[in-house]
Amino acid sequence: MKDAIRVDADTVRVPPARLRLAEALESQKDRLLPCVHCGFCLPACPTYNRLGDEADSPRGRLHLMGAVVEGRLDPASDAFQTHIDRCLGCRACEPVCPSGVEYGVLLEAARETAVEARKPGILSRLLLTIMASPALRGPFFFGGRVLRATGLADLAVRLLPSRGLMGSGRMAMAMLAATKSWIPPVASDSAAGPGEDSDHPGHRGTVGILLGCVQQGLYDRVNKATARTLEANGYRVVEVRGQGCCGALHAHAGSLQGARDLARSNMDAFESAGVDFVVSNAAGCGAAMKDYHVLFETDASRAPAAAAFSERVRDVTELLAEAGPLPGAEVKCAVAYDHPCHLLHAQGVARPPIQVLEAVPGVEVRVVEGAEECCGGAGIYGLTHPELGGSIGRDKVAAVTRAGATVACSANPGCMMQIGAGLRLDGASQPIIHPVELLDESYKRAGIYK
Image 1: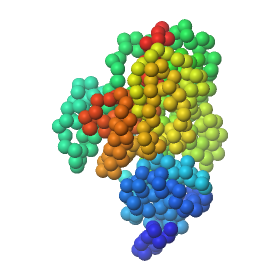
Image 2: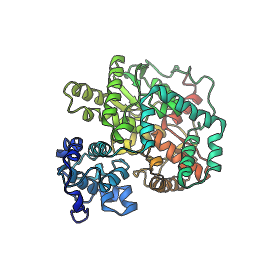
Image 3: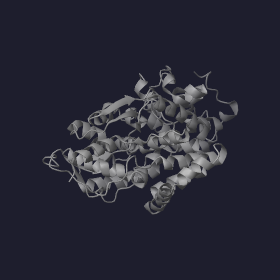
Image 4: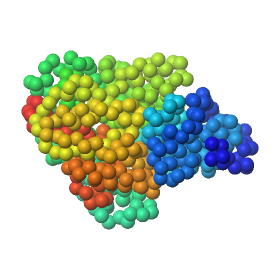
């Protein structure tokens, strides 16, 4: 293994100031020990499969992390920065690891070490600043909705070149265009509630829904569908004031302190709301909140509350599947379902989204070939790594197309945008939806809502 990842001689003498930057990774060194470099992770890793570089595999990156902790590698070195940055963070390596290495935790610590040693790019810093601030986030997504509604996003997809900086802009516009609703909006959308078929609403427990950043900004219809379908299945949905961004993007980008600041606000908000379950309809957000206990494990004052919070987090499809869910009217279509990485690998939730889709009469569910592999979106990865992310995304879109379905489906907004953008760039016509949108449409047709 040490022959496969070469640590240059001039990086062995790491200045003391650089070593101090590795404190975040140093604190996780015990989590590095279980890795025996067996190689089971290699075929599960999208970057290794495409680049063939050992340093771009999970065990290779763990070796680089170990070298930094041991003082043999400068965290500012190109070797560390490049290969840690190239990781999608899909965590597909975790389920196949016989030693149970907590790769996701280690990656976030490594990225915190990397960004402290070398400032990240302007695009990453700008997006994190926007997502953390409601004052900036509102206008940002309002502008996106205007571009979507006026058709300017679609126009940009047709006119912008596919390579270089403009290529990244074209991809961003394609992602935005892909957030359009799959059906015309219903006039009673915001006022709909459970009807007569929903007996004893609230008997399954009280829930609060994380509205999210991208979800609230571009997919608010998914949040509304989430509330309606949960209420129809016996859950009492309450408003959670003071909530905000979950911190997932910040943690993935190495801004762990930023993630903690956002997490504290959310824990306080949901605690004040007195909910039994914290519901997420975005796989990345759900995974982040289920890991709040890790984020605060060294904070004695917050650790117990963080652990209790994480225990209450559920993906919306978990609660709906547990409830049945209640069947509605027929919606005849074939659905190509793709697993979001942070739902399948990070949360271990595989069957519930499919159960939700199968509960809709007339739906044929076709799980996409290679559905366990990342779509290349990975938060902002599709924008910051347009070549590699685009290559992985094109493979995913090809698999979705081979399914021959009329509708594509995923349970995460980032995946919906990445796959939806790829379909649009390929000239495909099928929309991409969240599982709860299909169930919601079924309930509307059945008259379950008032």
